[in-house]
Amino acid sequence: MIVAKIIRHRHKYHHYLNDDLKEVKEDTQFKIIFSDPAELEMFEKWCIENKGEYIYDKEKSLQTGTLPVLKQFKEEICWCDIMTYYLLHVAGYVFHSTISPYKGEIYVKEEKAIVAKWEGEQG
Image (cartoon, rainbow, N blue to C red; front, side, top):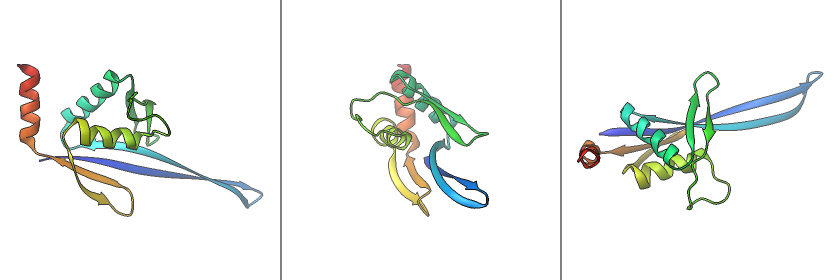
């Protein structure tokens, strides 16, 4: 069984002026992790084929690049939408569970599905 996880990272930025809290900003970043490294390569290739690019900056814990262009998504699209769409509708994963408290989701796929897809691409 192959496992994929979408992980949410929340970064909070506190702005103080003379020890007085003036503003708090929150930034949410997403990371996709696969138990099989070849799956990440397929996701990155799919992004490029759809006029996007997924790059994860480990030092800063955030994704960069450009979102793939998909006709299904027109407004307020984010990386979590792209990742979920890819896992469920392109790569053949199914939802397994959430990572509490609201830190992401886990998806699974049977290995035979990967072998069948690979054999189809080779043949």
